[in-house]
Each structure stands twice: as structure tokens, then as C-alpha cells.
Image (tube, rainbow, N blue to C red):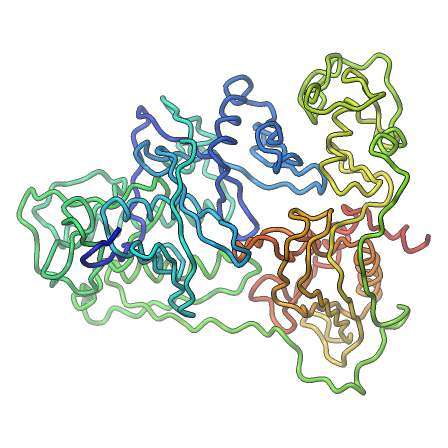
Amino acid sequence: MARQGSGAMLASSGLGFPPQNLARVVVWEWLNEHGRWRPYSAAVCHHIENVLKEDARGSVVLGQVDVQLAPYIIDLQSMHQFRQDTGTMRPVRRNFYDPSSAPGKGIVWEWENDNSSWTPYDMDICITIQNAYEKQHPWLDLSSLGFCYLIYFSSMSQMNRQTQRKRRLRRRMDLAYPLTMGSIPKSQSWPVGASTGTPCSCPQCLLVNSTRAASNAILASQRRKLYPGAVRQSSTFAGAALWPAGTGTAAVAGGTAKGEGLRVPSGAFAPSQSVPSGTPLPGLNNLNRPGTQRGAGLSARATVPPGVPALPVKNLNGTGPVHPALAGMTGILMCAAGLPVCLTRAPKPILHPPPVSKSDIKPVPGVNGICRKTKKKHLKKSKTPEDVVRRYIQKVKNPPDEDCTICMERLVTSSGYEGVLSHRGIKPELVGKLGKCGHMYHLLCLLAMYNNGNKDGSLQCPTCKAIYGEKTGTQPPGKMEFHLIPHSLPGYTDSKTIRIVYDIPTGIQGPEHPNPGKKFTARGFPRHCYLPDNEKGRKVLKLLIVAWDRRLIFTIGTSNTTGESDTVVWNEIHHKTEFGSNLTGHGYPDPNYLDNVLAELLAQGVSEATLKD
């Protein structure tokens, strides 16, 4: 549909927090390793809510509603998602949105990835796009939400502002997300409002809470300066815009004319200008999550009294993204308050060592060879799933009256997979005990867990993560090289450096991969990784070689960085890819890294004992 007029440039968030007695749409989300909350589908959220009503401290088996999520279980007590075949745990949250927003209407916005499949946007972005779409804006700028993309509704496309690359965009109807009424439990109310209890001390919550408090104070001050006669509002930021409608500029919301967009002018009015007394302030889109408003009071800098020093806001070095984000947010808020800010230039990471000649590259002492290759998966024949399960368990004639942590049914009753999965010789009421750890499960549940995994002849206890047999992965064919280079890593000045080079080409997915027969991509290869050349570093290298041979270093999945599906991604064993710095958290110095990666290898069943075999 053609959309005429000016586009939509979003002021940053402008988000409200609804009263506790209103209906809300519930969206369950999980946190990926890059700090982005990814929503579950509406069907999965309905399933979680139904389980929550019955037992608020129980567990949710996601495979019961979505076969693609068969390996996953959510523990409602700890609010974590657990993947049974890899042991990976991720935080989850119960988020709330307005019933009139996109999830309340069952509207999903998606972008087309490189494999011609569709990836849904994060929920806040989906809501923002839908709000602009309903107001018939011709375009939408997502830069204020942290993405350098423009959305064009006339062509239903997304364009990268830096590369000018365009992707298709689509809007589809799905099941509406569940509704809830009444007050929100404090343990789950973080996405909606501030808690009255002891604040969480995690970096994410500290950043959000400090940002929210600072933005409330600054925006209240700006309102008093810019609108001395305006109606006084609540101390909780309700998303009021600070810019009146002007010539060629649409109001931020509410009074926007049809076909016009959201625009944030950098100098729409002088500091002395004000709106008439009692004029209500137009509100921004209510996305129900904390946020700050950028660009406020840019022209107010001229009112700063002379002699006020410029306050430096440095990009603090750290192992995670919180410090740089906090520095940048502080600068934005200080600018909004009219304070001069001196931002220092962030240092660039040193990803690679100085050039090394071939004559300086040496084999690693104590390690055989300099290269390992993997080809197609070595199939272990003559082992049926029933044979594997029976190999590692002992039958229990009189099981205790406790839960099976796979299906969450009592062990004295039939398995929750009865009617879903059936195998000859394995009755749904049979219970077995794993030999080494002694944890008990329905045999049918263990069989279902094995069938949802890699089917490599090994089992992993979902309770204690003990591995039975030799665990292998789904890493596609490729090459691993390793050698010494005559340079030192930060923190290891007395040692040379072990450089590992992984190279995996694009190819076709096999039967063990998510989409057999479909092409997969391999971005960023060859990938260079670094270890110190000392006793522990060489031990880590030897174990990484074992993990490579077992196809555990990489897998095929969805990139948490780009959202691309059917691509080669890391598989829970962290590597250091930054040679001379640690600005990204993937470099040195990091005194705990070698111990941490040894623990990650052990969790995959790769231990020092494997080197003695």
C-alpha cells in the first residue's frame, strides 16, 4: 500500500509502565549470549502460562508444543531454560505488553535471511514497526533502538544504512499472545516496573535501573525548563515527547497527521520557547520496557553557565559490554541535561599479531602434527536407540514417588511421552537408573531425549550433566591448523603464542543437522584463535584437538549476532580471537580463561583422561 508523507525517525523509546490492575499481554523471552531477549512463539507462551497456573515452581517441557524445541525445558523456579542434549542454560523472563500492541493482535514482523527463510524481529522492534505501520508512516528509522536499519513500508523492505543492502520484510498473522490480569509477581515484574524489594546487582539490572532513574530526573528537569506551564506528570517516565509540532515536522505521536511520520528534530525550538499552559504532551509508543530519550535539550547547552567544566565520559575497558554501554548512556543523559561532555575515542581491539614469516612458524612442542581434518560424520551402526538407553541404565522395580525431570510426571506413573512415543519392549511405566550418577528416569523419556539429540551412542544426564559414552557433535567438515608464532599474549610475556586456525567451507547439511539437504553458510572463516605456549596452554590445545575430532567445536544453527539461520556457529567452547587486547571480552589478559575452557571441555566429555586413552 502506498504511503505518502514524511517518515518515522523514532525518539529513543519513550516507554511507560502500565498500572498493576490492567490487562497485559504476556510474552516469554530467553536471553542470548549477546544480551538480547528473544521471544518464544505465541503457542509456546500459551503452553508456559498453562503450566504456570498449575505449578508456579514446576518445569515446562517445550517439546510438548513445538517439536523443534524438544531438547528444551524451562525451570519456573529458577527462571532458566535448560537444553538437555548440551546442558546449556539461559535466563528466561515473563515480559508484559499492552493488549493493543502487536503481540496482543497476533502480528509478527519478520525479515528474510540469506537462506530465504524468515527470522522474527525482537518483540520491542516488532511493536515499534507495527505502531509505525498502523500510523501509515512511509518509513521507520530503527537507529534509536540500536539498529542501523531503515524500514520502507511501500516496498516492504529493510535497508542497512551503512552497506545499503536491502532485505525483504513481511507482516504475518499468528496466534495472539496470552492475556493476564491483576498484579504481577515481584520476581517477574522487572520488565514492567521497578521492584520495591532489594534491587538486583547484576550488571544488566544496574545499568537499566540507573539509566531509568537518571532519565526520569533529567526529563522532568527538561519539562520544567521547556514547558513551565505544562501539566505536571508522574515521576515515572510516561513517554511524553519534548518536541511540539512545527513546520515540516510531525508530532511524535497522538496528533500526527495521516501519512506523516515520527521525527526528532535536533533544534526544533529555542530554550525559551514553551507551549501554552495546560497543553497535554503527546506520548510515544508504549513498548513496556525501560528506555531513555535521546536528543532532548540539545540546544539547551547554550544555557550552561560559563565555567562549568567539561566532564569526561570515558569508554571504560572491561570484559563485557556493560562498561562501554554505561559510558555512552551517561554521555547521552548528560547531553540531554545540557551538560558539556567530552567523549574519549574508544580504543580499537588488536585482533591479529604482527606479520609472521613462514620460517618463524614452528610446531607446538609435545603435540603431534600441525593440522587435523574432519570429513563426514562417522556413523555408529548396529546401535539402536533402545540399545543405547539399555546400555547405560539399570531397571528399577520399585521407583520412588518423585518426579521424572524429563517429563515432570511421577516415576510411579507412566511417562509423559506415552502416546507420543512408542517402542517395542519399552513400556511407558518402566523406570531406569543411570549407572554412574544414579539419577532415575522413565526409560521412554530417556529414549525421547536420545532421539532428540545427536544419536551418537552417548547419553547425558539432564540432572547432573554426567556423560555416558563418547559424546560427539554435528560440526561440518573442515580443517584445524595449529602452530607456534614468536609473539607473546598480554599477561604471558614470557611465553610464545599458539595460534589455531579453523577453516570450514560452506556446504550441504547432513541428516544430523537442522535442515538436511539445505545449504549452510560459513561466515568469518578462517577464524584465528590464540593460547599461551605454556604447560596449561598446550594441554588445552590437545583437548581442543580431541573436541575437534569429535566435532564439538562448531555446529550449525542460528547466529545470535546476525540472526542468520543455517550457518556455522560456535558450540559452547569459548575461544580467544583477540590477540593483543581484551576489549571485546574475547582476548587477553584473562587469568581465568584456561581454567574456564578446561571446564567447558569437561562439560562436553573431553577431559585429561581422554589424553591417556
